[in-house]
Amino acid sequence: MKEKAQVLDEFVLKIIGIVTMTLDHIGVILMNSGYFAEGSGAYICGYAFRIIGRLAFPLFVLMLAEGLRHTKDRANYILRLALIWALVFVVELVLYYGNLGSGYATAQAFTDLLLYSLFIYLLEQKGWKKGLAILPLAYIVLCYSAYVSETYAASSSLTSVWSQYFPELFRGGYNLYGFLMFLGFYYAPKIVASYAKKSFGNDDEAYQGFLKSKGYQGMTNTIYISVLVIVTVFFWALSYMGPIDPYYMSQQTYCLVDAILLFLYNGKRGYDKKWFRYSEYLYYPVHLALIGLIFSIIFA
Image (tube, rainbow, N blue to C red; front, side, top):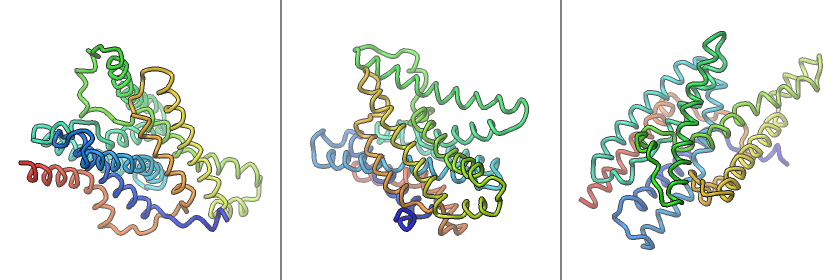
């Protein structure tokens, strides 16, 4: 039954991620732009969109892990991420200094994805270059520390002085939470493959056959789901142990619905024409600009 349920490929997960992400960003405007009073219909709609949007990031983290495993040129792959990050940064700067600055002056997910990919890329280098992986890791911890400092200060009616010099536009919004999830997603197939290698011993033909089977994907999906649940529940529990909740876990826990999608994942790439590959990268900065432009025209 589990194997028959594997009906979703990467293309479908990307489309779900794109749609839920778009709703999430519309929700940011509806809630944070100041155009709608708290408790109004539009504000409540924005909150609902943000809840739906919680599904997006874990899916993009999974696609990043898959992309890094399967790409033939990691340096070029990371360069594309960096270029999109730069485009998004420019768009957010324009919106920040425009009428919708209050809604978009936040961290962007591409900062997280770029840092995670740089960490793995450097970690798997040889020699002294491996040690450079400490740099993206340190930046991830710095982002997390800034949010922890601010949430703790706010709960105590204080001000986090040092983090004021570290604007949100330069931060990764999911930082440590997303990083731990990414590591689990990235190493899950390797863990299953290593276990299978020991199980099949010297029977290489059986081992290779297993790697192509739905059983292999089913075991990998089980680890994906476990990672999603464990990391999310950990930070949710952490938010109840003290005044530290940089991820708004009361909302973020809705991402656990992704467990259903991970259960249905078949590990295949699916539709992958070149035009779609370029479009999925460009969609992020373009849709942000369009949302900002539309709302600025409506409320000009």
